[in-house]
Length: 348
Image 1: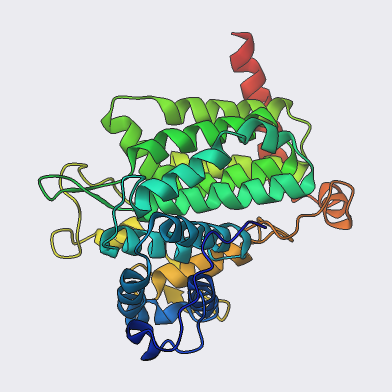
Image 2: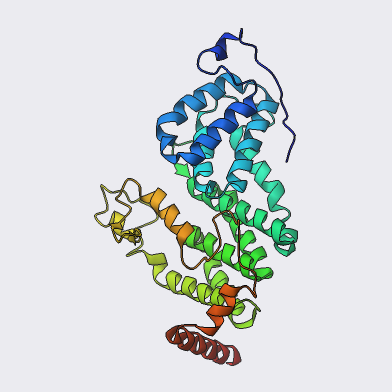
C-alpha cells in the first residue's frame, strides 16, 4: 500500500474534464479504472491508448501527479498476475506521449527511479520470506518486459533499448542464482526464456562473454544446489534452448534490424507454438505476442506458478514428491550423463 500523493478533486464545473470523464474525482480513480479495464481486455490497448494519453496530458500537470501516475502503473504491473507485458507496453507509450517533463524527471526517468529502489534490495529480497520473494519475482519479470518493450529514441532518430536495464537484469540473475532455492531459480529461468536471446546479442555486440558466465552458473547450480530435481531439469532444458541459439533458426546481423520485408526468414527466428487444440501459430500471427504470453503462463515446466508469482509448490508438496519418484527414464539418463561429464571437466 502507498499514499496517494495528490487528492485534487475536480468539480463538475471544470470544463476540461466534464466531457466524458464525469464521475472521476481523482487522477488515481481514472487511471486505476483504465488499468483494470486493460487487464481484463488487453485487446483494447491499440484502440484506447491514444485517448488515455490525451486525457492524462490534460490532467498530469504537476510533478506530484506524474509521480502518482508512475506509482499506479508500477503497482499494477508488479502485483496483478500477467500484467507485466501490458504494463511495459503502456510505459513505453506514455514515455513517448506524455507532454509533462518537469525538472524532477519525465515519466521514463521517474519509472526507472522507482524500479531502482526495488532493485537495490535484490540481495535481501532473494533471501526473504515467501511473500517477499514473490513480490520480487514479479518485479524482475516486469523489468524483463520493460527491457524488451521500452524504446529510447536517440538524437539521430535511432531506437535503442534502455542500457541500464541490460546491466540490471544481469545483476538480478546473479542475485537469483546466489540464493538457489526453487522459486528463485524458476524466476531466473523465466527471465532468461523471455530475454536470453536479446541479452546475449547485446552482450556479444559489446564483446562481452556474460551469457557464457551465466550458463556456467546454471551448470554449477545443477551440480551443487539443493534444489528439487524438476527445477534442475528445467535449468538443463534452458541450457539446451540456449545451445540451439534460443530456438532461432539463424541470427540476423545486429546492424540491420530484420523486418518481414527484408528477411524472408523473419518469422522463422521465432518459435512456432501450438494452441491447446493443436492449431500452430507463429510470430506472423497478429495475436502472437498475446498467445505467447498465455503459453508462458500455462507452460508445463512451471507447475502451480503464475507469471507474477501467485503460487508455487513448496518442496515437500505432492507435486515435487511425485516428480522425484516418476522422473522419465530418458531425462534421468541425460541428467546422470550431464553430472558425470561436468564432474570430469571440473577434475581436469
